[in-house]
Image 1 (cartoon, helix red, strand yellow):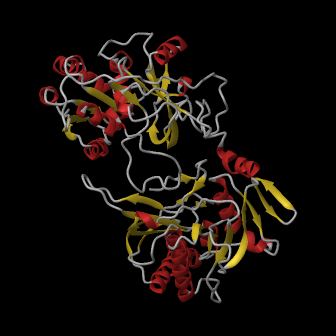
Image 2 (cartoon, rainbow, N blue to C red; image 1 turned 180 degrees about the vertical axis):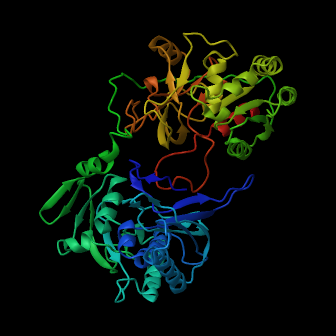
Image 3 (cartoon, rainbow, N blue to C red; image 1 turned 45 degrees about the horizontal axis):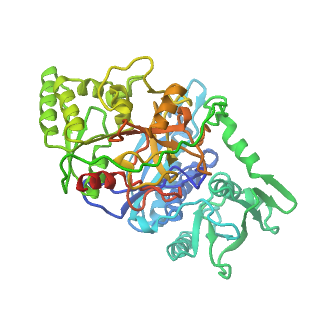
Length: 578
């Protein structure tokens, strides 16, 4: 439901993981949340305080994300120095456990299970005392709130509890703050919330600003200790009602991309560079422009092919290979559109099992109108080998003949996403429309230029709606789509790309926030030439694309704004209904 980083720039980190509850065939608005809390600097000074505040922080992160303070449970991850026979060393984990236990009693939340280790020493080096608290609960999708600032001009206030003589939140006071925050979030009076952590209010404001590129002006009266000091149990809330009087004023969200306090001002771009570039020399993320040209392709279809035989509820054959992990999402998307999906597991335990799977698939294909090859990590996603087993399976005589008969005689449809796209392109089904042997002139998919797996939301533009799969779109339409791949870079000669584009076979391209095809790594996640995300066969009936358009549903990706439903499954069913 929430991507790890949110806002249109996908730069504001979430504070709690939120996932819809998985159901195979139906739909639900139930979701689960999990958040953690831990500050090694506090725990090093006082394991008791550190563990207590770890519990508090994990609870606050749930509340800041929209959860109610009920039916919350904890689990702990503990890691301490080797204890030996030194009583003072034994006192460290004991102190931490007492702090965590005190917090459980104060807030009425129990810890279930956990993991501990007392081996965190090497020669004279010891790990800092570590007790990480994980808090979990459930709620519904309509209650989830993401932390990025939403609108310039909104006021931001701080709600925080009273503290006791030990500097810890007073439980009754913090519970009252929980109730206030929950009411503000659920009523829509607050649209963003963040509970400060190690960097205090300053860190929270900075991260809330990154996501949508807003700035922030602090109240002049706030001193630096308040801005940069610890604020565990506190909540920053972006309010929508300018007349609402609640909490302590902290500042205002601004259009100017800078963080200001009095006469001091820091450009957001400078802060972002410091924030992101710390490990850039080790794990490069902001790869500069390659200088390779690209352009927006455009091919508007005037007519579409029609199937030999119409059917009200087309059957879709979905093969699940070893490593496939998107078959259920694909089947649900097809069923929602009005198709009849059939998942067929390909058994590879022995040569005889593979042969029987080939026979079963070829037989089932005779009664199917579509093949959908879902994504995953076929064959363990071995380097330069994604889709290798899938390709070998489809090249078997029985399956190859069945695919030919489906396309050439019955005008069926085929689609492959991610791993499935890799298989289609290795088979030649895209861009040639039939299974052929690849040569040096054939397009391919290879390693991302970033040299590792990419998982994020990207924007794709319809470059051609020639395919029946894209018949419900218009050229120029832009759709958000989740991607998850390590080998997604489309490679082909410029001559071939232009030939495909002229024939309407470049289906979709990665685009920037202006809707223009881009080679920028922030928008083109794998460095595909001419920003190609998807291509088709010459007649459009076979479509291959990297983005997971099947991963759709209400309530998903709430912290990354955009249009998600490309309606390709609905379009495929419409093709057969006529």
